[in-house]
Length: 100
Image (cartoon, rainbow, N blue to C red; front, top):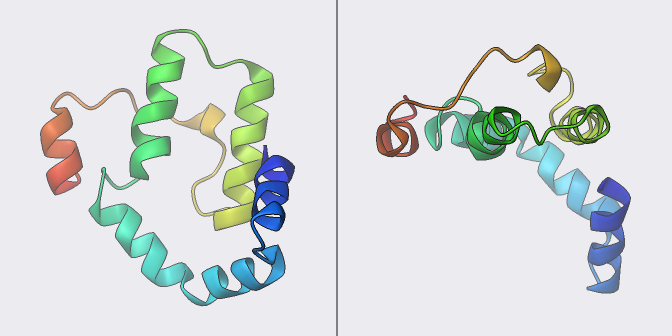
């Protein structure tokens, strides 16, 4: 998944090295933003992945790719998605608006 995104960036004229460098400088700001919008784990980790798991659509292969993507972008901050015990938010609107 990551190599496909990097190729898309390159095709669009974005230098992945520069982009990752700029993102690294903003890592704390990004982490704070993720915590404030869509729950503390963000929209992918907090909603999309639990939804895929609930529908039994999360294969071991897909989980490994998500883990790879999260490690590449956030380090070991969140751990493996396979260890997540979070389910779907009970109140999606509150979760999105308030980070519940």
